[in-house]
Amino acid sequence: MWGLHQNGLFSVKSMYRAILGVEAIPYNTLIWKLKLPLKIKVFLWYLYKRVVLTKDNLARRQWQEDRKCCFCSSDESIQHLFFNCHFARFVWRTVHISFNLIPPTSVHNLFTSWLHGINKKLKSKILVGASAICWAIWLTWSDIIFDKAAAPSYLQVIFRGGLLDQVLVSITEGGGSPNDEDRM
Image (cartoon, rainbow, N blue to C red; front, side, top):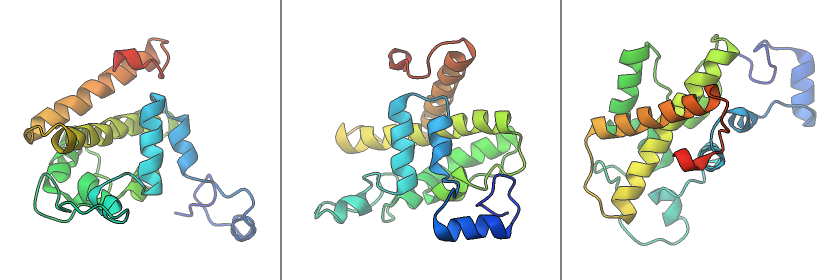
């Protein structure tokens, strides 16, 4: 799949424009078009740009604390926390079993080729659900790190993500504003 043209097909014109820096399709624009609260869009944009303050990014800013994942003993990174950790893999496997969707393998894959071939409207709804899962993992991580909460069960994170997804769907289908953060 060619990522520099909307139809996914290679063309000399799209390559030429990409080299010149003209009209290349930035994948992060997809994030801003999703019907999500602004704070989740900003979080997803940070995730896409790989600047979410996971422990590896904190360490680059001279943070001296433990760099291990709060769910396991591996070194924490964005890739690990959201896709490789046993905790995240369990959540994504649940999505795979429930909806017959192969789990995304990375942030880049999530916003580029993961849903290739799925119609635009359905793709948008699936990305809202996937965003809810990423947000639920992040909120759970934040609870453990900053509020010193005990690590919850997998099902609590799935429930949190599913509940958030239901709220987001009801907001967008009910005519409410996706930026209505009082419902979250």
